[in-house]
Length: 243
Image 1 (tube, rainbow, N blue to C red):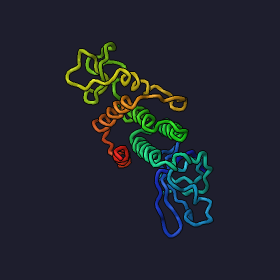
Image 2 (tube, one colour):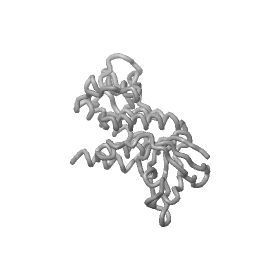
Image 3 (cartoon, helix red, strand yellow):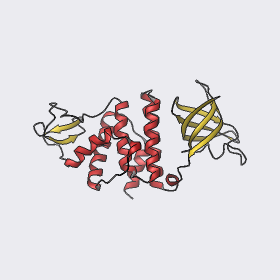
Image 4 (cartoon, helix red, strand yellow):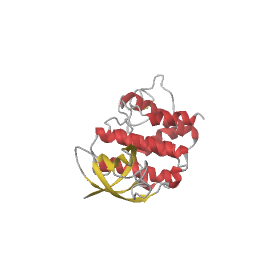
């Protein structure tokens, strides 16, 4: 029997009473699991084989085919997330993003821990947009596409940083500035802080809407330019923000 911490990222009805679930695990990445009888009323797997179930999974592991789920010990019900459409949307996006990142990088434990720490902070009530941007920035390192945040991306100078440009790949100093949009000094400082912050230790996120928008716009454009990831859940978040 194998055990691992994970979170259900998708579920699919299988046969008359069962499910196939995909679980992002800390050790193995994404695993497909057969949850036998999980759709029956009395099944102990019924409530723990749904999307966003976070817990310790017990299963018979098969590397090249479906593993067999036997039991799950829930670690956090994520009840605050599950009753808020905005939080559900951001969490679903982060899970989809993480599942794509592990396809390109096998540092499963680091990728998983960053994801779970972010989700737990959303559950605590912290701003899901800010947390999403923090995780997006950190995941760029695993995708081999981290922007330059310690110096000018053009000349390498560490002084007189004037803005940040997705087109130029990071910070720009005043000497290398052409017609790029100027962002606030707070945005320049915070985006670097986002990369270095320990998500699990965040106790306060007091950021103005204008700065949040500048950071989010930069990361949206940066992901479009350099990652090749186009996620349906991200489109849903964008549409949700327009309502």
